[in-house]
Length: 175
Image 1 (cartoon, helix red, strand yellow):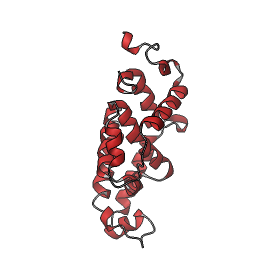
Image 2 (spheres, one colour; image 1 turned 90 degrees about the vertical axis):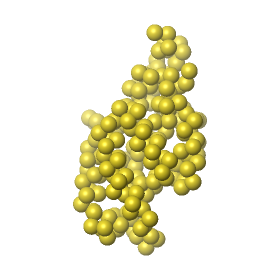
Image 3 (cartoon, rainbow, N blue to C red; image 1 turned 180 degrees about the vertical axis):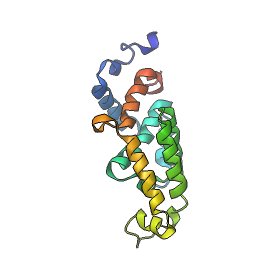
Image 4 (cartoon, rainbow, N blue to C red; image 1 turned 60 degrees about the vertical axis):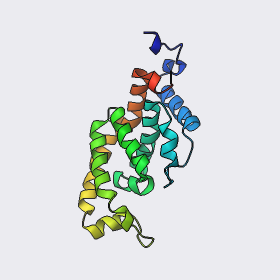
C-alpha cells in the first residue's frame, strides 16, 4: 500500500479543497499554453502528462465553459480536434460517463457547424438558428448544466479530479 502513502504524495494529506487547489497549481505549472489556440499545441503539451493529470488539464476548460457559457459554446472556444479528443477521453478517464456522452452529443452537433461561423454572427446561436438546431442545442446545454453541478453548486468535474487523485495518485503526480 506504499504507493498511496501521503509521504510519497503530500498533497493527499490535504482536505478536498486543499487538494483541488494543489491540482490547480500543478496544472498551472505543468500544462502551459493556449487552450484557445487552433494549432493543436496545447493538446500536444498535455499529451505528455500522466493520464489523470492530462484528463484534468483537458476537462478544466469544459468546466469553465459550463460555468460561463454552455456545452455548445465550448466548441467555439475549444474546438481544436486534439483538445476535443483529450476532453472526451478525460471525462471518461475521470469516470464522468454521462457528461462524456453529453459532450459527444454536443460535439456531433457543433463541429460540423463551426466552419459556417462568420464574423457577422453575434454568437454560435446564430449558426444553430440558421441550421434549425437551436432547440436541440438548448436541450444539450440544459442536460450538461444539470450534470455539471453537485449539491451547493460544486463542480462535478472538480470533485472527480479530487476523487481520481486520491484513487490514482501515480496517474496525477507521476511515479
